[in-house]
Length: 374
Image (cartoon, rainbow, N blue to C red; front, side, top):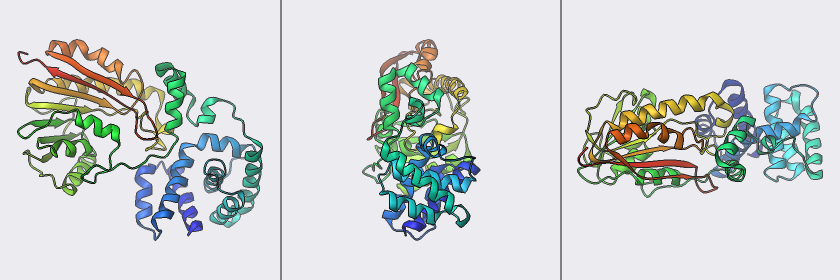
């Protein structure tokens, strides 16, 4: 079973690296199609997620013993073996022999020789050329977060996001990070209220808000993502209508929302972001995000917040949230939109940046209320 688990992990890593597959989408589908018990599925998940998070550090160690770049499947096996040796504390004999058996026969000699050297190097102590390599993040990401948060907070956050996420279930059974639960709880919702979730997929916040008796209109730009909201709302027993305890789903562009002004008692803008506060749950995201994405996303976030503000009734509430840590996407968005929000009669109520920990993602939120006479 362990050898089978490792073979599945090797295949998954190859598809993530070579085909651009998303780990959090690919792996659940792969595990649903194999006959492994829960323990072995958890083992595969740690191998794939952990080695993907730590690939820069792991590859640095492995590359010391390579004379040329190995084929993708051999690279995947080497990375998984190194992860077991360095990060998981697997006994060297077990980690090496089982990983060798999981590799294609023509690469087993290479995998065996290199992993034995990695095991020896690990026992002697490994040094890394930079903090970014040791932490296993792109250079620019470490530098950006250190600039925005300060070195200590940035490094603590980066270390926390190298740890596996712990699933958290709400009372209704939905798996949702505590930070996301906290944001949803900030949205006032009671029977009779009509709430807009402007960027709703996959629907965790919409369903939580509806669970308190509000009627929720859940919007998302993409049809496929809107479908995820429908599926989750159905699974949790929410009505598909815009009524109490209901989640009505629409496909809409939040920057030009097709709704009347001053329609909703509360609007939530859980905006698309770089996700630099939730990298523990999205192991490959740190390798996909590019520096230029931050500015582009900040511009989009400002547009979404401004358009959402127009939709709130007098006396209503506007909530902005992102699961990232960059200043541009958090306080920078507020600084860029505060004049527009004030002009519409909004006053800030509260805001907070929570840094990631082993228990929850990093999250920023800001809550605004619209004056009764505005």
